[in-house]
Length: 209
Length: 209
Image (cartoon, rainbow over all chains, first blue to last red; front, side):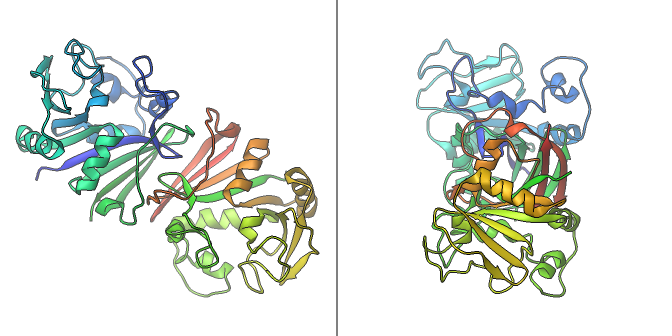
């Protein structure tokens, strides 16, 4: 059965990106610390077309997280670029790591952008429409909510997220983009089903109750 | 060697207490959710003078956390009561669970308050003086920084905390008292040394580098 999956790295104080996100620091000041655990991993390096790397307790978690994805959805800030700037082709170069259709939530219509195995579709009629298109494009495979936090929040609030994977990183950012917004007592209908301790990160996996 | 130890429960969005702390809700609205994992445990019930209870992966973590403590330090909000109200005897009844000298940081001088095996000393000359007195009182045993968040921050910033134990609870409070304040890139000189996955909580233990 097709599932909607969402994962993010998050600091101990709840931020999924540092402050001052910019072209030079797309994850914000200090935001790279949230991903330090992933860079040495062989499975991550392979995603980027690099050889070598390490294997640790995060390996099966990440392998599972990137498997069976048929489409992704992201917000316009994650795609980047100035609003309406059609020369902008995203952060990821000529072979983005998605390898599937990516639906970008935006207010600016734009023709689909094909880069390697990834096609970016620009959706101007809202989060529900983007999800419907992503579900269709994914076929039997799952849909990934790629981020950022605002987009993740939209889909969590819609109650459509079947799995949430938090990579809890033992660092404090102090300011930046909070991943969770607003008071909740039900965690969006999700419940903790798995905890994996790994070097420099703890993986918490939640599923719909 | 005597150590200074600090532990707290913390939500996924970084709060160690909910909003609106009051006599009726000393942990703030929703703050009890941060402690739901601990209440069923036999080791916790025993601390409160109750029999029965459960044993799970949190048991050895909590047993270790409450062992070998010779003195505690807390802020005046954690002790509670209106400033200068000498009729207030804390939240914990006639046999508080500390069983050791407790040094309360306050601006209001007050004679020591003896309740069962616990004596509360009211320290008006600051955090460093309180620590010196707690170290002396603890003898060969450890000193616990009991909270709240403001007091914890003071001692973390002073660089005197040898061990930090975070009980990371898979819930979101949305607002309340943030445990960590200010941007950090060194986590107060601490490093993650142990992760324990347990039902409804993940324990992260940090020690001085």
